[in-house]
Length: 349
Image (cartoon, rainbow, N blue to C red; front, side, top):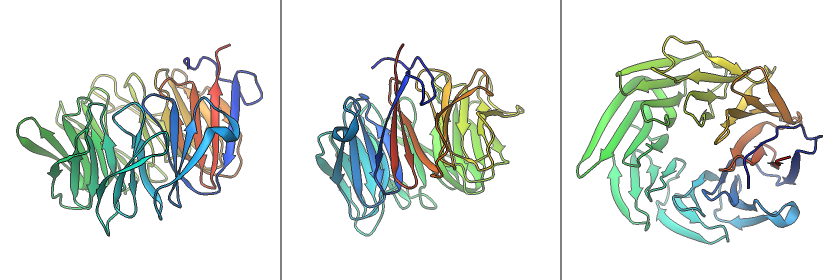
């Protein structure tokens, strides 16, 4: 698949659309690292596997993996598969052909925070501990206990450190012959967590409808407030210069060139809406961001001129819950609250 070269409306020949009515809440959508297949996590324990090269009904296959919702779904360390967390306490590995392997089972618990790294490490949070697994699926370490339930986890670029988000801040765990922990403290409940691409900054979304950022070089931290809703999606641009977020009436971008956003106003990308931006996803190579809205619309905005945006899905009354670019950026998957899955394919012309 080539890079996305055209940004056209659904009525122009540069884009094709396939869609499926799955009739379940779409809680997670992610491509494998190879970009050949995508997995779609649904609310009633099914995962749909999409073959990105086969369109229409033949392109989507369902796999029953749990009696309850799929709580977390990400690409695994290898090119082909995915990791999943379920509400019955299982950490699962899923293959494109539909095979499922159980890496961990914690009866009576639930697993909704997981992470993987291309080096082979995986981890999963169970209450106030994080379980670390190697590429063979063997548990190697437990990180914690933390002071509260771990709500989000993320590897740094090298795979040698893990950031864990919880009540009152973030813990940075590093292992290099010796396990070490550094605390980043700020009051409140921290939910998702993300490293910047150069590993200098740590960003969290919070229960208090804010984004919080720590500068690990300068030792400073910053509050980004003014959101109308909790920030459900944070996405770094390919060059690492912007962190784009949901939760307001436009996509909000914070600049991270130089010393970061300290003292700088944010930029608003794409159109304003009477509702709100429910999801954002930055293109993996180009200065573009896909923006999903509570009314079901999806637009793609250029970061070079934040007022320029192209509509790719019109409003349909179904809030956008997920957006995911394939690794090459030539395809975009969109999921909604009512279970409509749309595959947009951008073609070079």
